[in-house]
Image 1 (cartoon, rainbow, N blue to C red):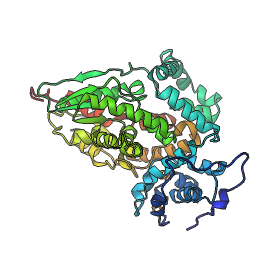
Image 2: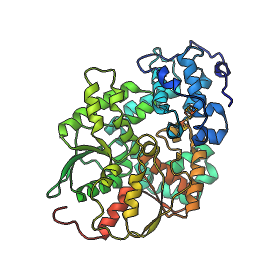
Image 3: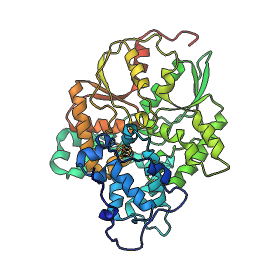
Image 4: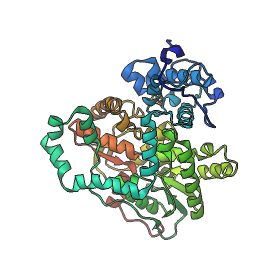
Length: 452
Ligand code: SF4
Ligand code: SF4
């Protein structure tokens, strides 16, 4: 075991020292759980890619501990090591000592962002600005995505991709960015209010429609609503709901995440539902952690815990219902890429498999390490595009070895990333949400019973 000394990254930097401040400083009790065994190292995509201790969970915990205990300041080099972490939480699953790595990393970032006098790196402040003023504001986000829609609709996107222009002319970074751009050729999902009200519904649920999700992948929401209705749920989408704040939390902007969480709690409480359904793994994981996010706010802490207990991932929810009636055949070889925030953060692995195995005609081809990150990780694929591409290449090799023609996942970011992986590797596999396949199966099967 080689744990570097904190002084290895304690090179003096220009300007005043940056330290952890505020209410979110990582707890020493959490850090003390680490027994330095190194079981997490082989699970960590950035350690696998670099072989560097400081790009491993154990190394990063050591750095964070050094800052918390005042042995080092937050240097640019240290920030680089924290920044390269995908926050995939595979290390949590691998850890025999229950180190809550995800919350330690989120707290560390929040304790850096809480510094006054704007001493954080410019890239962190910029990320926070984009998250606050674009991602969390539907009108601004839609305007920003207009460029993407024009890129698709004018045919320029197919021309660039079909002609090999990007490969010949663009530098590697821009080429990666271009190949990650979604194909925005569908009408966005912007519905709210009552989305479905089947006769004799046995549950009333609310759907989180999210920020980018309905804009980029409306078909996922449409399939989710139809499947929920088919399994006997009245489905509503509270009009006052907002972005869940997951990306803000991951980026260390805990304050913005708390503002969004409070607004969502009010919006969903007003809907008076049996469960809040989330079909994006990252959003679901964040909403299940609202209680912790608002733990220091006496007015909201209890309410947030109650709300968090009502959040269900859509796959977890559907798999728990009597869903396997009237299914028709869907031909295909399908492999599952477990979204990190489903498998590692929410510990849900069986539900997508239960659903896919129930669909006649589908053949499930498990890949090697389906729960290893695909390199998407929210904004990571944009800000750490090189490491993201390295992680994605490994993932696409695992996918190719299965021979599957459909890749299933449960998060819009993963969908975007895997689509880019398919394009870059010259393949033609479709990337789909599990409930889209279930919806196909219902359509190919017998109609819903009157009581359904
Ligand atoms: S969250 Fe993922 S990338 Fe970060 S240290 Fe853990 S396993 Fe590695
Ligand atoms: S597996 Fe857990 S206890 Fe072991 S080094 Fe990693 S974080 Fe520490």
